[in-house]
Length: 106
Image 1 (tube, rainbow, N blue to C red):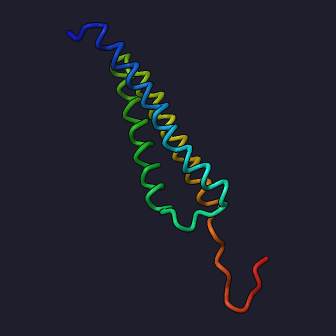
Image 2: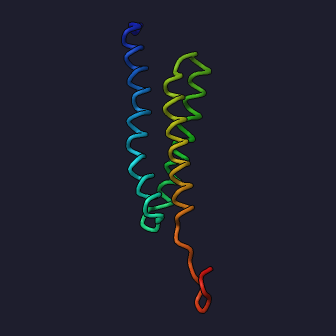
Image 3: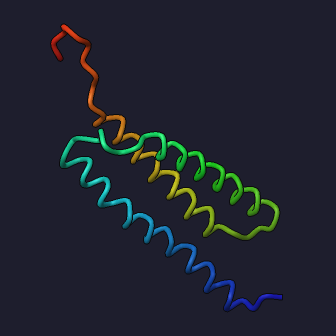
């Protein structure tokens, strides 16, 4: 059996990943908002990360239901999913619009 102190430390580390991940997303969000440009960012990659975070959240919820433990994993994966969704939204919002030949951009 794993000692409670180890479980508490693991929970704290898992919750800490939420804040570490959010600090990694912030520079990307700031750059997107300041430049209002996302043409050089791969939307496909961010969509894959979104699906990956969705699967991780599903796994965390199932594990919580099975074991009654793991709420820190749910928090961190939910934060990751939300952060990835915000990034995808910003990429789409600031994606350059293609202009058809012979037509002016409005």
